[in-house]
Image (cartoon, rainbow, N blue to C red; front, side):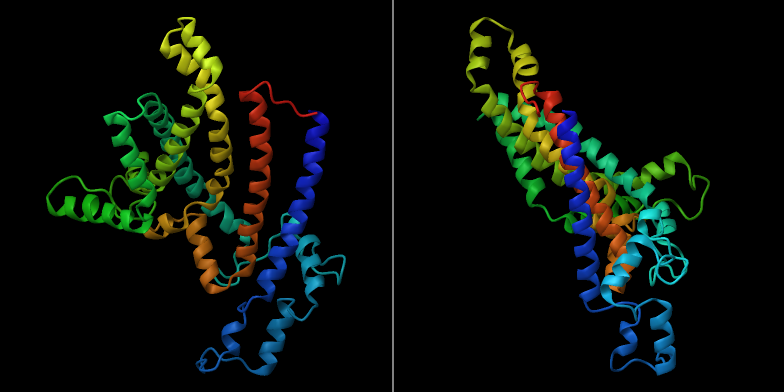
Length: 342
């Protein structure tokens, strides 16, 4: 196992290096950037730059250097190159935001958003797991029953329903209509109230979290329950399950002790590989509910060409995907002792 982990760690490092190279090159070759708007026709006189100002900004941002040198500076800093002050991402210096929050370092932006994203995504993940696995098990055990058809219909609706439409309907009903009817209404967006006695309290935060967490968990809940149902049905047809039943083992123990453990293996793959979304957040959900998380920041950086923020977001996402794959492989050995790496 130790040798396997060492080999996987070396592979992970290589994958991350290649990913960082591709991310940097693709973003730098794409149109846009901090000075893009000044090169377009129709730029207003207020925002236009003189050629001297353009050259000065190009040099200040390091855009006058060759692309491969800029990549090395992004990775390792420029103190080795021209005695600059950049330390590079391997020393925690991700640069400053160009557009989203000018003058603010990317790490500061990251620290202000990641907590909100983990709170929202973690809550949605927990809700999904609590409901999806039991729903999948019940649907498999009660196959072709009325309950199975109802749960299957719920899953199909959850998978097919557009997230943005469901989010807007939630706001329309539970925020606007409930307020019009004189019922307790949920806040339509944001992380906390701007004023009021409950501002910043746990109750205030929970109120703002309810709707985006439900919207975000619906798709995962629906799809994971389908995977769980299929996996459980396959395991229940295995010979060792029939043998357990023939020996007179109580059906509840057959399900929980003999079938569930093996049925969880495909679910582990799906759930663990979705862990990077804890960092990514949900771009659409955070945008609809004005939730100040990583997903909303990503959309803002993407539309405004803020490359330092985009590169941080994409590289950390790639690293988390690699780590999630390793975590899934390790968890296989925990769930199924027959799986060994040597």
